Image (cartoon, rainbow, N blue to C red):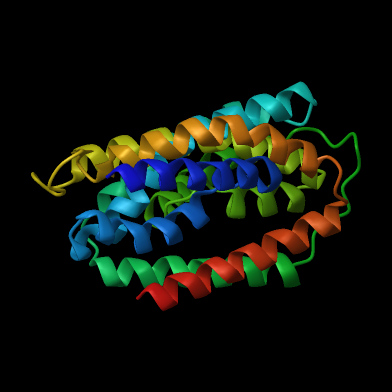
Length: 265
């Protein structure tokens, strides 16, 4: 356990950097890393993927909040869009976690890996409208409905939703850096709804100790504290990268995570 308390903050630094840079809350890299690490710390192998997803989502609440705060200071969070999406994101996170706890651990692993590859392909090959600096913030019930779907799928694959929210907003004409900032704020709602769901939907005694439902507390706390400190660094880097460069980083990141999950299986 003493080793874990050193490893989890290190993962938190990486997650925080990615949260600020890509708007993904670091969830995907956390899921991959925790899927490898948790069985070595006594978490049953058949519950490791569920615990990785739940712990990642719990840590995302603070990670995404720190990233959103840093982006807000730079004026890159579209708060009207966030307000319309939050109800759907909370509901979707709760529903998605309820579905995920009923899925076999190995099946979940392949779902997450497949999702990473599909998201990378969509972002790389998809065509987006050219975004200007004065595009109105997307709003309305369609954004709430999109939030339900994004929240539900994010709960199943353990992420803050950036790999869906960012492409959606860019497609709607939002500049990439504003899409990342807005996605970070949306990640708070996704993490909250999903983590509560994983805690309450889990069977009794899902994990042996140091856990609430499927949320493994040493991982969630250790990652969250360090990621809060690291998120502003990624935010500063995001504001210095061209939109196309940011997209290429995002695509490469998704592919690497998918391969690591497949190897872990």
